[in-house]
Amino acid sequence: MTDNDKYIVRAGTTAHGPYETDLDPKRAGWEWSSLRVLGLADGEDVTIEGDDTEYLVLPLSGGCTVKIGEQPFEVKGRESVFTDITDYVYVPRRTAVTITASGAARIALPGAKATVDLEPRYCPREEVGTGLRGAGPSSRQVNNYALGNDLKTSHLLACEVLTPGGNWSSYPPHKHDEHNEVERKLEEIYYYEIAKGNNEQEGFAIQRIYPSPGHDIDVCTEVRARDIVVMPYGYHGPSIAAPGYDLYYLNVMAGPAEDSVWLMTDDPHHTWVRDTWDDQEVDPRLPMTPMNPSQTN
Image (cartoon, helix red, strand yellow):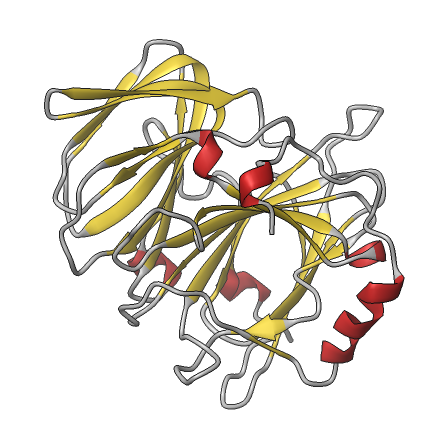
C-alpha cells in the first residue's frame, strides 16, 4: 500500500477557467507553498487580486505583460522550458496584477504565503542563477529564480531542474522537514514537463519519496507532463527521466523560517554517491539550455 493517491495531483484535476493548474495550500494539505499555471491565448488577460500570497510570474512558454498599478513590465519569456531560461516578475503579497499574454502562453505562478511587504520587481534573465549539478548518470541542470540569487522574497524559493533522458535527478535522496543548523523545514511542490520522444510520443518519469525519521510517507509513481507531486516531508529522490525523454520540473518551496534559504540533508545511506562525481564527467548533453556565465555555480 502506497501514498500515491494522497500526494499526486494529476494534470487537469485542478483546472478551471484560464488555470490549467491551481494548487493552493489547502488542496496540498499544508500552509505555505502554492502553484498556479495559466494557459492564455494571444492577447488574453487575467486579473489576479492581491492576497497573502507572494509569487513569480514565470513563463513556461510564450511571454506576457504584467501590469501592476500603472506600471507595465514586459516579459519576453521563452519558446519552451527545454529551449531557454526566462525573465520574470516578482509579485509581493496584497498586490493586484493583470497578466496579458504575448502570443499563446503558459505561465507558472509559483507562490508562498508571505509575512512581510516587499516591492514588485522585474527580473531579467541575466539574474537567473544557472549551474550544472552531479556527474555521470546523476548529471542535471539547475536554474534558480528565487533561490541563491539577487531576488529577495518573504518565504518563496523556486528553481527548475532539467534532466537528460535516462538520468537520475534529485539524487542522492534528501530531505528538508525539520529546522536546525543544517536543514530548514520546507514544503515542496514538483511540477513536471516531459519532452516528447523522437516519435512524438508522450514521455514519462518516475518519482520516489520515502520515510525520514518521524515522517511516514511512501510514494513511488510514474509522472507525466503537467502532473504534480507534493512533498510535505520525507526523503525525496530520485526523479528518474525515462531513456529517450528529457525531464523538466519546477520546484516550489516555502516554510516558516524567515531567512529564505534552502538547507537540506542527504539520506546518510546514499550520500557517499557524491564522492564518486569527482571521477566522472558531466553528461555531454548538458547544458540543455543557455546558461549565465556570471551566475554559473
